[in-house]
Length: 439
Image (spheres, rainbow, N blue to C red):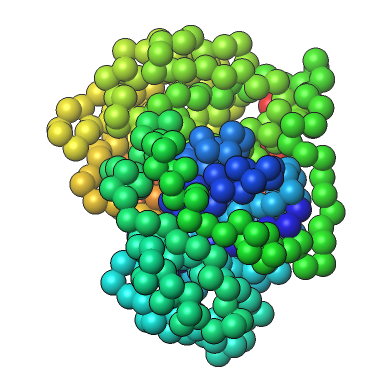
């Protein structure tokens, strides 16, 4: 599968809009597009999925390692992959956009804010291209998409100023309809605030599909392609049953995680927010999301009481970030409203008006836990606006070697066979295999 990476000059330059317009332009020309996202993100991929019609792949060296990253890329489907970068092209010590592009050997399309520049757009692109040589990265900044650029003389001036080795790949005109609302944790999800189709179509018209396809290339060195996600055989009838919460409160699960669970278990989705009961199961997975936006519904839901009963009886329960919050004693919103949660883990959670942690994470297990054995390490990421006040006698499963965890030094509250952590992990870490092995 050929591909390219859309890297930005900085955060907020319009990479997501450029990515969605590129997907729309390629599909309009008859191509099957596989979207992907560099870095640990659940929100931008939801917009990719809304436009492309199938899940976006997560590509992160810290979470997956180079082999895992290449396998996840190879598992995508289509004839061209559009990878949206994270932050600015070179930003991020754990897994920058540049590092992902270099690991895959894919060219970079630079998204530049051209709203107040013309020749300077070319100078910026040239600087980003030559900076790779300065820091010793094997990276090809091959073209530019001019974001928020007008037509006529403005677009012509940008194109004419670019050196021959950097292709002009089109422009996206300024349009207020191409702004996605945001809130804590980032943009609204793709199904909440999708870009209007007519605005996205207009943006796609300004892109040069033929030049984009000329730049796209297959990953250097190839990759051992596993079976595509939709061709993986479901688990057999004797496989364990895992109840997975999926609704507005529990939205942040990587597609690869659900795929891995389905390969080895029977997945039973349920919605605590809607009042669904906990399905009969051998294990429970509560992903991250926005429990703070649905705290009243969760407090009234029979599902949390049933999760607590199952946990007390020894059922394995894994809660990540929002899942940790739901497993706690209580959740207090920014407005000061306190709601009872499942009460499995000895902590009270309070929302804050600014983020409390944002980083790649490395944890070392200090005891056996559902996702790791004593002495082993897990890599993941954390991004949350809440803080958890754990009881003085609370037991923790992990020491934090990188990141913030629950109290700065420790993460992974553990009770019975229930684990609640602020760390989101990818299945490439082996955490979900360990979880399933313990069922």
